[in-house]
Image 1 (cartoon, rainbow, N blue to C red):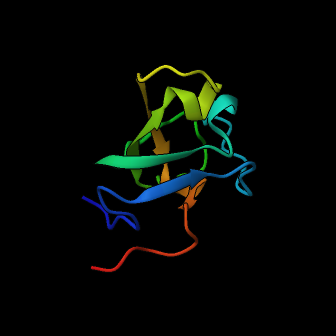
Image 2 (tube, one colour):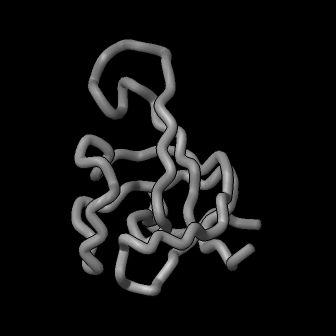
Length: 94
């Protein structure tokens, strides 16, 4: 498994725009905050044409964070680490 920058339990924010241009992060999750629930390693994608495979994380979002409703439900998305930053600007203490 590759080295992940994040750990399970880290609060993260999805970037609004990505400098590398990867278009696969859903628009409705950009700028939203969630929690890393699984480190998924990397997945080679021949359609990417970059030969760069950033680690993938499963991120949990509250529906109210994403869509602004009072729903207690959760939404999960697999997001490449290049699209994520720490929600508070820095990693949590070990």
